[in-house]
Image (cartoon, rainbow, N blue to C red; front, side, top):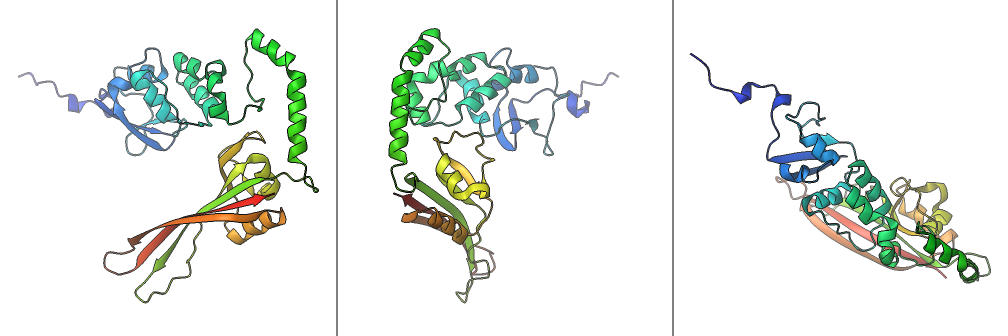
Length: 289
């Protein structure tokens, strides 16, 4: 007697794709419909998931399909795959990196949307400063206009530099904000343990040039490399975790604190005890005249 077809008897790699697909992109987990992944013809994702089976696709330890790309930026790639539209938050600082991701995933229309000539009208909102010469239009007429106004731009830059270094010691004014998350445990006897202020990482926000001037080699730039000196960032952090050391460096550079704020939450450490874990996020704002 002939046996009926038993698809479950196929090897795992021969099973067709499910309707709902789980992805692990650079450590970030995404769950989406199979139809979304194949919605843009000729894209890399369409090529990957248009195969007859899952054979040959990398998986993580939990069986999710693994893609070794930027997990943070993939959310915008997936949003575009859903409806072929691009919506970015205000002051989005990763446009160039997202364009590179779009090129990798073979999404030419998204690449065009992210090109500088398309986003030039929003350059003030996205880049934050009209005088930053980081991007230039490839068109010949814009290049000609840039050459024609070179003398004026140079004069304006010189004026800005003069104002920036008007103080007697040549140091420029500006703000630097440092923030940290801390935690401590409070028991029945209201005594805190030795880890009263456990600081995992001290974040630095402000203009790149000021942050490098103050913290030097102790500034970790791995989360936001190649940031131009006159641009702002909120992704730097310090290689040490002592707040007093950060305060000393800011004081030595002529900064003084002008504001601070903090928020906190509480949770029980153990269900069987009254011990509570308090966690907080605190920011300190420093200014130099």
